[in-house]
Image 1 (tube, rainbow, N blue to C red):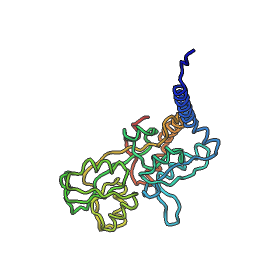
Image 2 (spheres, helix red, strand yellow):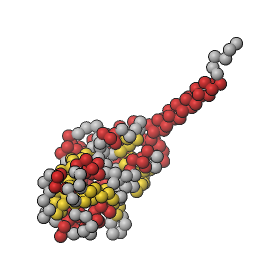
Image 3 (spheres, helix red, strand yellow):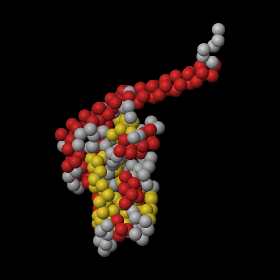
Length: 272
């Protein structure tokens, strides 16, 4: 009888089945993240510790900031230990995708592009971002950026926004983290930057002579807890946690303590 399934076809079928098996196991492993967190007794949260007042280390090298307090509260309510995984803007999602972090709480804006790769919780925080420059500098439209260098942190939504906005003749200068970006402005190396309003305030505190002010709105950003796709149980738990902690006012209190302002109204209006 003629062999209806040649050897190469059998091997091909076996390879496909094996690949599907690995994909299925991966999906199951991800969907079981909440159980693994409880089983290990800790949650690994990626936080960029170079972004005051969101997250930073103080003079005693202790972790401070609204994102740090949010992460501590989440771990406490989960009943597990918090393990902070240091990151930067460009490395937040890779750490998550390679399973070196369970979630990301790092002032990460919910965007359609990021939603192609990861999932987010409902918004728990947010901020407005601007092109900022000294008061003495007249910038009223993007055309006024021609001939200017604009400091921005690589891999952030600010990077994407200013890249779209900047006209031909403007130079976007990218730094590896927010701390380095701010230092470049504070030191006088750069005059124009793309940053959140709170970071503009930090620059003015460090160098009052800069008299930095918002010039052009980039976007109003909403932040979510970043998670891997298919982490269904974990996402459901985090969404309920955000909802409950907004109702109790705890997240608003954390925001006001560190940001010196009320939490954006859009955070309270937006669901999952």
